[in-house]
Length: 607
Image 1 (cartoon, rainbow, N blue to C red):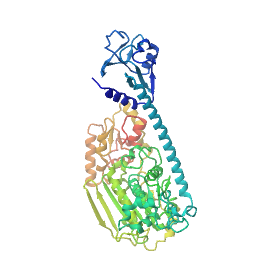
Image 2: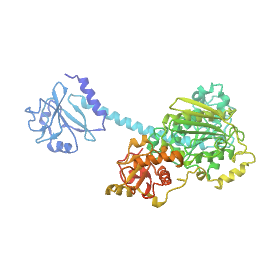
Image 3: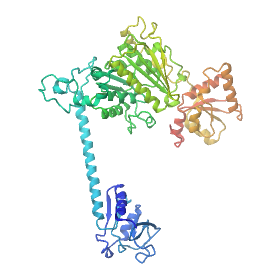
């Protein structure tokens, strides 16, 4: 026997799980509803949209409704006998005369919300519905107020300092580059003294409360925090490195944080780019600023919704005190470094791939510390630097490196310049940090070496004299394939459909191949294909290919595929250099497996 409280709990559970209920009610109490009924039309209409009816009685064979329903299920719920579920109406009217059958309640989606069997239940359900409606109204009002508050804060950010009340002004209200660092939130505890008199304390009451734990650090102190408050930082990229760096810089209370990114949030970013939440399709810079503003509204934020290029880099960097390079490609790293040298800005450069990370503090102090070119005069071969999308990356690894970038930026801004040039290496899977001491600034560096004028470097950057993409070999494949050496995914799909004999070599790494692969393909990881095919390495590659082609004819076409269509081109060129294309056609699938999914097999996983 179930208690009244148990039945009420079940009713409450059902009711609060759905939308506002639709009540089918004969208008009578349990004692008198025998003279009323729901018509067959009412019930059949509900059944046709998926409703299920509950009725109290003695069983499907009882005299009350011997032919009304079928396909019932016993659900003990009350002392009036078992409850029975009747999903399908067979014939006849719904007779309300069964013991305890007072009302049946459905939600707006035609799903059962509750069964009412005792006097007073309907009042409870009505009150629950009323409360839900009131809560919805309050939530809407809160959302409206939050939107209005954000607009007011944005307006406050743009107001000149001289137009603000004295108790809202900071004694150091602009950074050396002239960018405003006005606080966007007024003091919630204004001083009781005459507002025209000088402030008694240099920070707002809310700032003492918010930043107290870092203010009491000797390394920061009030003096250091005031430097942070009047400083500005530009982050290049709002991805895996930029997100953790940005959120900790916002928490530290810098005056102005700008973030540059022309990309939009993709679902594949979310495991490591922690600021973006559900903002898929939103510009990353805008999404990051939205998250930072929620954490700390006292900071000024600027979202630069564009990619960093040689044309806009000088203007963007010149408005900030320090730059964090949170990009993911060599070309941008060289560009950012050159721009920081030309603009006299310190640079914190971070990188992460797979489970490893790297950190450098460059051009610090400006014109004294080494630049990125001093450390890496020659970029690595283009085909030796995979992206995160190609090689993978572990979220906590980029998190660690991004947080360390924020830490180094704070140290530089409070005046703690590095006393020697070092590179920090992080092996995430080995749980280890290692610091490598570097030689420092190179006299022969083409960016910061002896005899290099800042103005001349700025001019070379701005007029496009330096092609950073080509310098890094990143304009596609250095020796790209011709049109006759490539096919699109649809063309290859027809080859498969017609059953034409061929061999498909997938050059993704083994772990990716095991995730998903085109049926019938074989795996030869790109990491096992040498950059040069002469000597022992080339001979090993030849043996591998011969084993893969063992059951094919000498003229059987060989198709090569990778994830995006870049590594496959390099692989084709290496295979051709081995001379195995004398009788057979060798080429790649343009766009790789992503194009295969888009144009041929929509069920193929995208990762």
